[in-house]
Image (tube, rainbow, N blue to C red; front, top):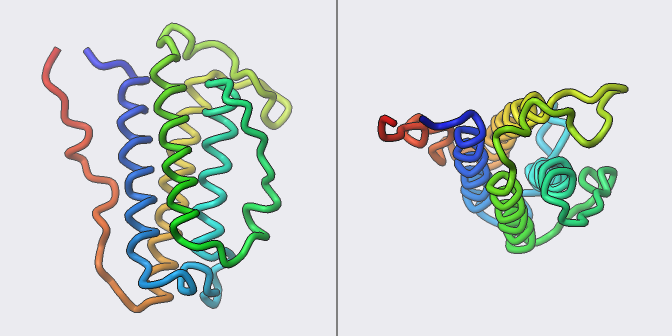
Length: 168
């Protein structure tokens, strides 16, 4: 039987792949960074934020990668070429997959190693939160791309097919 950790690993892989597809769906580098009225962040800034978030909370905190987050730059950076954004996503994918693969399911009830909001929620609670945080911002990114480019084509986010697993 699959554990919640195995399911979370599948969800992170699926959603980070979706993040890459969203970035590739922009027609050019400039549209990734263009402002959309009423939308507080560009697609590029959302992508950098997600990468920084995942590399910090999963890669560094759980996988001990040594990554040091610069959250303000995730929102202040502009006009980075898509290929560099995509490479940062690839790095995050590798770090997240490695950290989750090395994490024994027995550790999920343990306190998360970083204090969050004055508390230490469980590792499982933080991973669940990070998964929903990723999905939330993927929706914003999809909206930004469609509103900015006028292209309503879906990149196939959140496929339930990824959750299928053989019985056992």
